[in-house]
Image (cartoon, rainbow, N blue to C red; front, side, top):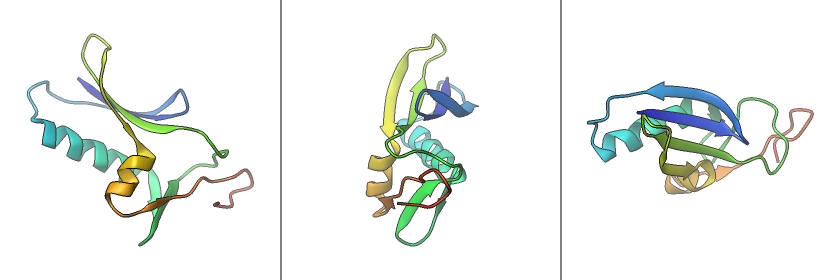
Length: 95
């Protein structure tokens, strides 16, 4: 099985894991992946790379057959942790 971090339709990072992991551990791996690829402070999270406003950021849990088993929207995950999501506009400024 795999966990993929996507920006728009582009795969930014992909991590393989064993199919017998419990759902809570899969969620923890997804959160770890999110925090590895986003900058953050005490109140907000934002993409490391330049990003135009409106690009979707999500994490997908994929079966070995390529089926999407679970999809997490980064904005929703950030809310779970009490963080706001900032899009990085062209030119590097955050909005």
